Structures are given as C-alpha cells and as structure tokens.
Amino acid sequence: MNSSLRNLLGLTLLVAPLAAGCASRTAPFDQMDQAQITVMRLQQPAPPPVVATPGAAPSLFPGVPGLDQLGQQAAAAAQAAGIPIPPGLIPGVGTPQQPAQTQPQLPMFNGMAIAASMPISSDDMKDELLDLFGDEDSFQPGNLGCNQPPGMGISMVRQGQPNVDLMVSFACGRAMGVGFAWPHKADGLTNESRGTLTKIYQALFAMQPPPGA
Image (tube, rainbow, N blue to C red; front, top):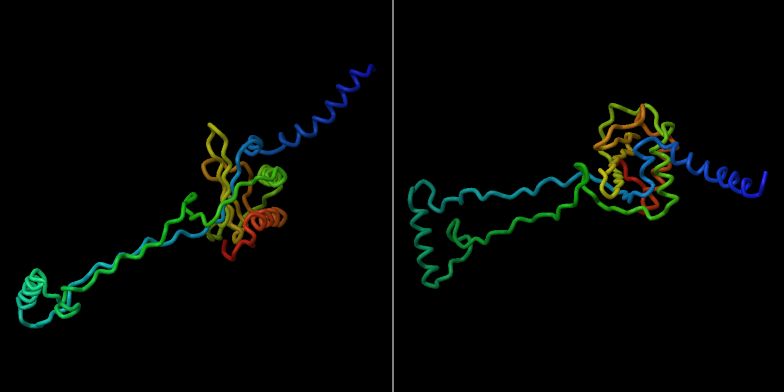
C-alpha cells in the first residue's frame, strides 16, 4: 500500500465518525447544525388591562328629577365664566379622570410570554441540545395528565426554511414540537434529559427553572 492510499484511508476513517454523528440525529434535528438557536424563558402572559368604566355619578338631589342636570348646567356656565368649581361639589363636574394604568406587553412565543431570551453561541451547547432532541433515547412515556405551561422555549432558525420551535415543561417533564411532527414515540423527558435542559437553562439565565415552569 503506497503512502497516498494510506493517507486517504486514514482521512476516511477520521471523517466517518463525524459524519455518522450528525446523521444519527433524527430529522429535523439532523439539519440544524447551521441554524441559529435561541432559548427563551417563558411565563404565563399577563391578563389584559381592566379599564374602569365610569358609572353614573351619585345624585346631589336624590328623589328630585332634573335638579342634577340643572346643577351641572349651572356649573358649566360658571366654569365658562372663569369661576372654578371645587372637585366633588357637584357630581360629575370637576372630578379629574385618572388615566388607565397598563403594563408593557411582553413579546410572545407560541402563546407564552417571553420573559428573557438568549441565543446559543457555544458550539458545544448547540451540539448537546441537538443530540438530545435528535435521540429517541432522550425520551420516555410522559405524564399525559399534566397541564402545567411550558417554562422553556427553543427556536431553531435557518434562512429560507421554516422555524423548528420547541416547548419544554420542566414541571410535567415533557417536550413538544410546534409546527412539525414530533419524530419520537414518546415526549417525556428522561432524568438525564431533564438534567441536561436544566443545566442549559441555568447557564443561560443564571437561575433554576422556577416551580411550575
């Protein structure tokens, strides 16, 4: 065997395990090596703000129809003439309106609010995540009766291709795909898988997944 053939054989043996490693992942995770992967800390969306509807002002002259309207007309004339009307003297006149207080709305991810998001910049962390979701052995039968909302979201984005989105509930020990068919027979996390995802969550957000997440 000449030296060129030996070098070619050695190169083939070196590359083969690397190629087999990516090919062993289940689709669509075998296509995600070049994807931008972002991990999100999710929480329940805040309820919509309640805007108070002002009710009818209490009557200044209960039991005497029309006098309240006359009083308001007189107050309006006095205000037009530059005579100030103390707040509360006549119902509905001179009472300042409080603006409705609204909370800033967080961005959403598949029905959940994004409390924080971090792109994965570490190739080792990306490989760890793809190996986990691309391996049938990472999952076991899940707790179908658990309805705790997911506390972790994962989005894998490739240019010109549909996103691959994932939701993880640590409380239920389950994962689910959004917008694509789940490739495995089960969706429950094994203890090892839960530990790996918890480690990634902690590394990115400097905290443990909160109870119920």
